[in-house]
Amino acid sequence: MAEQNEKRTTRARGTSRGTVHPRSDSGKTGEGVDKVDFRGYVNLTLNDTDKRLFDEWLSNVEAVAGGINTVIEGGYRLSVSFDKRHDCFTGSLYCQVPGEANAGYSLSIKGGDVFTAIQRVFFVHLVVLGGQWPTADNKAPYNPDDWT
Image (cartoon, rainbow, N blue to C red; front, top):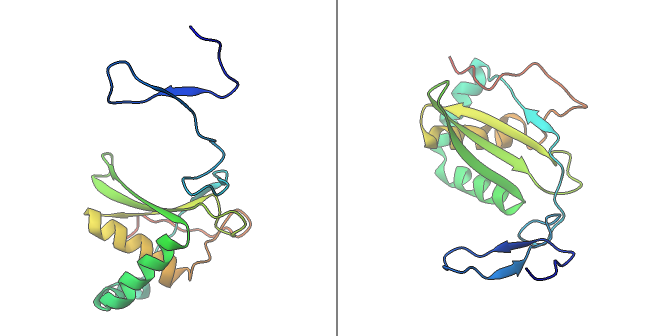
């Protein structure tokens, strides 16, 4: 085996022999922006008024689409997963923008289907929290699972 470089290497997939490529800087995102360290989860419970506002918010398609575009373009990462234990989907936003108050936190909301989970996490971020998440310095007794 050849002498190892200081940088780690990985094998490219899709070839029988594999081509060795230098590993990219793991301290950067795909855009070359510094990564932020994970700091925790933000959970909350919506009250009845918020739940009614959710339905009203969904009826304004232009505002919903515009808000979602702004959040993603602003450096938040959206992910969706299935929670087998609770038989539902979880929509999560992760702030990967260094220096922002939400940086390193993940806001997660559950929904009965993929689209509801996505809609709810954006609604909570944009409308309920106004983009300012309660973090370690600003704790509140919230629970994202209470949609009854």
